[in-house]
Length: 150
Image (cartoon, rainbow, N blue to C red; front, side, top):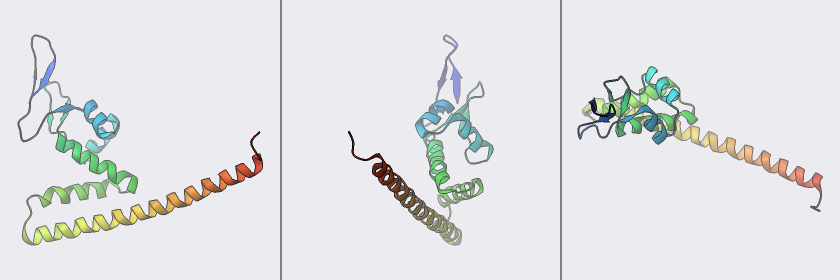
């Protein structure tokens, strides 16, 4: 999918309309807001597979690959495990072509992920409220002991 320009030695990336523009891992990392190391880790864990490799062996990503990384990135702060992330991505991938009973089962699994995510968001909000209350208490104590500003 990638070619090397023999005159300049620079690599130019071509892609078909189905996969979109190809980008190397550094650009993908910048666009998604993850480190290169994290993206490589997710690849090793089977969460993301680059759409292509250049002639030089560089990973090449498309917008759908970045969308997949964004899902993983949003799951991370909610405490989902790599196995849970992989399972959700499998469900989402399979929904595109599933029909009948299989589709209903996948939708049930997706609903379970939604319920788990919503519960974890609620727990994080509760933790944040507790942390904000603590910070407010410290501010009040600090203000009390500092006295009026001079």
